[in-house]
Image 1 (cartoon, rainbow, N blue to C red):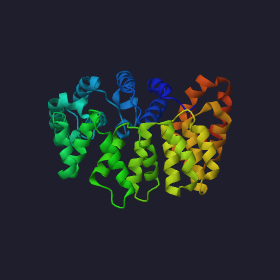
Image 2: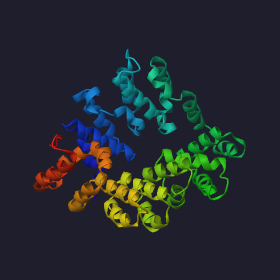
Image 3: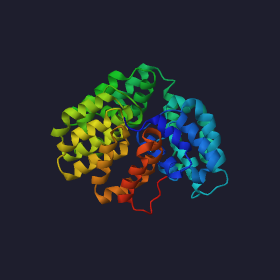
Image 4: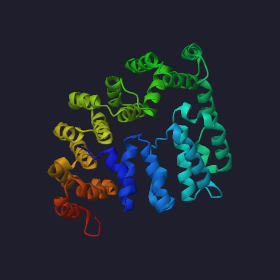
Length: 358
């Protein structure tokens, strides 16, 4: 199966900084939510220093922070940003912590709004943390469900989004999410439709895979991208079955996004599905993207197919994914140590002898 969250979390403390950074990148792109990810990041910061532990930490797309971890994260952010300029790398890492808190469940950050507000006031790096919006989201948790539902009738778009999220936190939003998602089947989706799509793109919510996959093939990139993110977050095996059924009839953008979904979910059957879909790609660009997806899945149970995909991808693509290739070393040593010498030789045929690999 594809390289697992457990393996990647383990390598967040690897001695090679490239392995650490690549592991964090794959976890982030999959919207992995294991609390030990954050714990491992902090441990690596303590061991290697914030500047060296993860080269691209401020640029990662996702970092899950549980409600139990909020006090530790806030203390770290305060410490890391204190007295530092906005351009300072450590301060930028602190800013990412603040941004990650702001997109978590309202119930998780609500008890700490005072500390978050103080943190923003003492460091410019937190300018992306929307305090007024966070306060509104927290306040909605105290409102009655019937009051929130009135916002679907006459509320502004931002009111509808907050009401929907608050109902979802209480397990009362299924009807409204479904109504919103289904409104995308109409020529003009409702305001609730946009809020529902945004909600499922911000949290791991299952049950709407069929409708979302239809949106993945839409011409509007903003809509298709939200649907793509939603399906990746859900990491539901059903999504892969639906893609297998619909892939051949999709347009090129839909096929490319579907491959992206499979790659980022990193599920047990992902690499097999990629190989099944490759010949169905609408053109060489899609088929090349399928090979890239297979490489980034790092499924060494199918080592020969993995190596073939790496050797066949276009040269420009090699340069785009070279960032992740160092993961091949600890993975091979863990799963197929006797093959590492051959794997290394074949990788260096394309990467160049100057590229270091274990």
